[in-house]
Structures are given as structure tokens and as C-alpha cells.
Figure 1 (tube, rainbow, N blue to C red):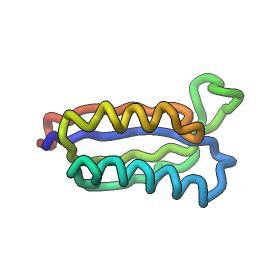
Figure 2: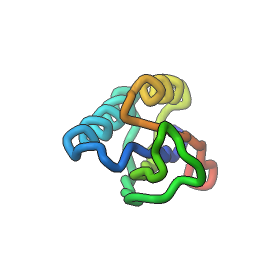
Figure 3: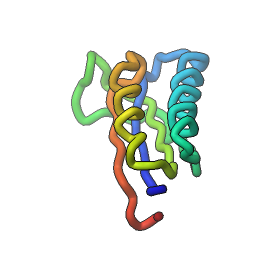
Figure 4: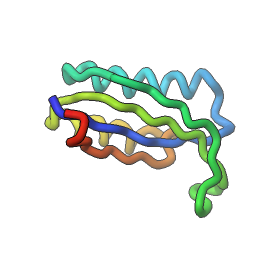
Length: 97
């Protein structure tokens, strides 16, 4: 298992229930691949450097997790097709292995 971190943001106007569904789906994909979620850090609303999809702010969430490298592509695919996730980035963390 390798260490990764996922940073994504959703629209700040998104309802709490929809935000919880996004988090639940991400956790399900990670655990389905025998991974573990180590930490979830809600950064809250942040101003974007430029407008994305007519949004000037985003509600950021950082997730630290361990997973098999084979399952990262599936997580990336799920995040790409989820309309609530505006942008995301998955980074391998060699310093946390």
C-alpha cells in the first residue's frame, strides 16, 4: 500500500447531504480496493485564483489515505464523472509510506 492525498473542491452552495454523498462515495471506492482513509481535513471555503464553472469560491477537502496503486485509476474515474466535484488532484506521498 502506498500513501496518497486527494484534494478536491465542490461548489460552496452544495447542500450538506450532497457533500456527504460525495465523501461516502470516495470512501467506498478507497475501501473497496482494500485501502484505508487516514485523515479527512475540511479546509472550508477558499477563493479560487480564477473562475471555474462560474464559481469564484470552492469548498476544499483534503483526504490522506493508503491504497494499492492499481485502484487509483478507479478513484480518478469516479471523481471525473461526479458532477459535484469541480476539480480534484491525487498525489502520491512517498514521505508517508
